[in-house]
Image (tube, rainbow, N blue to C red):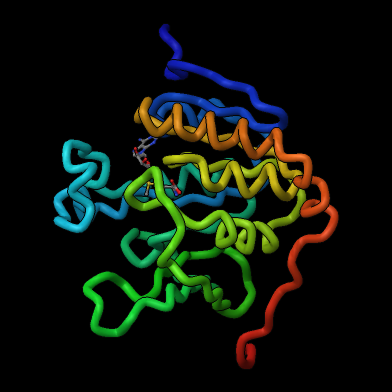
Length: 220
Ligand SMILES: C[S@@+](CC[C@H](N)C(=O)[O-])C[C@H]1O[C@@H](n2cnc3c(N)ncnc32)[C@H](O)[C@@H]1O
């Protein structure tokens, strides 16, 4: 039988796999948490604002309930961006990213992540304008670092890795990471970004001193 892993790159504590995550996830062991940002199935490639990637088809359909069940079978904890688009069980905890987007702007003012934690909803404020992107839906590294503080120690998996932002955040916080991406162009970008992050001399400083959680309002 041929392996679903088309390429494998090991960079420090990161294992990056090229291939279809639906075929690769059942082969994985030792994953503690899943922090991911799957295709929302809203065909973002057709959005005129993002036409620079119009040839790509990756956002035509969203992962099914079975995909998320498979992720729950291999990990204790999950944070899934775009959780409002998917068939997921009810959860007490949503993580919300306030993008400081002007109200009259056509793009979303915030995004929501479904989280498996039994804690109240949390809010992170980070201005979306002004960070350069190599993927049409690239998340800020700072946002993914903020998410990582909610996970217990152990390996983090991002099965829809895109340009590798979750991996960069893991490197900066000294966490083990497994990333899967189906598109070779994005896979190559992820490899380069994670390699660059791994070569940064200041990464252990951030690992030793993760940012303090910020209380926003009252817990329910
Ligand atoms: C929303 S993007 C992730 C962007 C990422 N958060 C970043 O900061 O770059 C989702 C990614 O999932 C990838 N993808 C879609 N289906 C996949 C599959 N079955 N297996 C692995 N990757 C897949 C797409 O190619 C796309 O790059």
